[in-house]
Image (cartoon, rainbow, N blue to C red; front, top):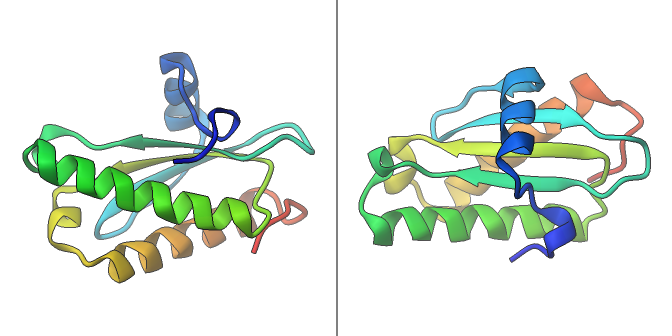
Amino acid sequence: MPARQHRVIRGEDYRRVVRAGRRVGGAFCITHALVRSEGEAARFGFIVSKAVGNAVTRNLIRRRMKTVAERRLSDGFTGIDVVFRALPAAATASFRELEREMDRAIDRVQRELAPGVQGS
C-alpha cells in the first residue's frame, strides 16, 4: 500500500480532483488527475463501488490498483493527484489488462497536464 503521503485521503481532496481534474476514460476505470504544486509527491485515490462486485471482488480490484500505483511511485512519478474510479468491467479484467489501462491513462494525463512533471 502506498505510504500515507502518497494517498488521497480526505473527501474534500477526492471531490476536488474528480470535479476539477482532467478525465480519461477507459474500459476498466475512469481516471481523474489534477496537477499539484511543483516538487510535491504524487497522491493516488481509489473509488470502487458496489457496482463492481461483492466485497471480495472490490478489495481485489483495489489491491491491484494500489500495486500499479506503487509501481509508478517507485519509478519516480511526482506532482499529480490521481483518482481511479473502477468500472464493473474491472471485475473480469486480468491484472495485466488493468495495469496496461491504468498506465496508459496516467501517461496520457501526464502528457496533457504537465509535460515537465517527473515520471516514467
